[in-house]
Image 1 (cartoon, rainbow, N blue to C red):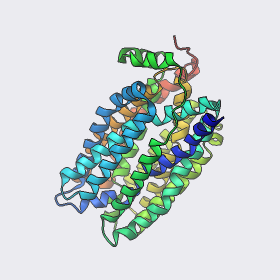
Image 2: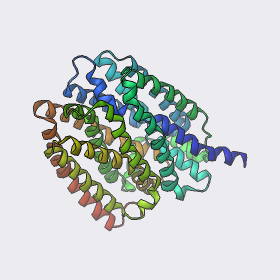
Image 3: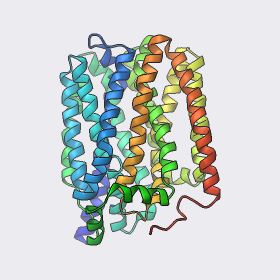
Image 4: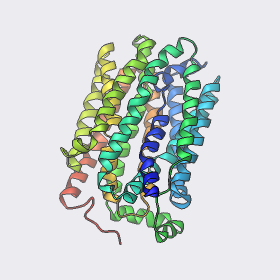
Length: 403
């Protein structure tokens, strides 16, 4: 009973970890970049590229480390890297330090992605509640979004004192997150599972992912996530160009996070209204329309509203997406590593798109850059969606047993 109580404590501790994982300075980060000399839209793209390359490099090794030494240990490593990232941003007075902050931030995210989901999936298995994954994780993630909103809203006021102040507060929160990770209880995992992971090879992982029809879903989800991450990276600079007062950045960002929090809280209910293909079709249509609006409308309040909607859905649908992916790979012993391959796709796309979008903006304008991106988004994802829909109709995505 004591073990189960400690294991159940992982749920609220993981919620605390997610709270600490939110970058409260995200609303003003793009503007903060511009306070450093020689930073342009293309430089911001370069910083995004550096972070994405770092995450890409660390993603698969992080999944291997997580599966080999333990998910809790990987989560602790993630929190240490996050602390280092915040220190670099806090001390940044050159492009190089901004790049290092982005690199360590992405490395931290690499050790969390997949690992956090796998750890909590195992926690719920230990509590015999794995069937409640979408509901439980939706509520935990909702908490992880809701609590930092107050801090995010306060960030522009802290900026009125100094642009460094939000990073000082973030460092304190990161240390709390580190202590939360250290206090997690490791779920009891069968010895044979640990041994098999210990001798795993990537060919086996790839074969298993292919057998489970996982990679088409990971590719679609990774492209969507990567593109949205790149779009969000230029949110603050574009708002600055449109002369939106900085004092409103935290409030606007907070509104998006409130909406995301509400969606996350009802992830289980929302998921019941979708099938796997209809869920991805919804995202394809929604994000295409939103990027087209950014591409053809330059009215300040319209652009701000679109960014709020993107922010809300980008994060509000994450646990539904994870739920679908975990349903596909639930019989796999390499959940963290397989999820990491999906994150690698995300990082590769965000790096390429982020740098390309920055270059396009520098050569043309923000609106034209977003318009070109919307067209490319449709061209790439429509054929992939058609493939997924056909595979789903043929009985893939969960119907295959792992050999």
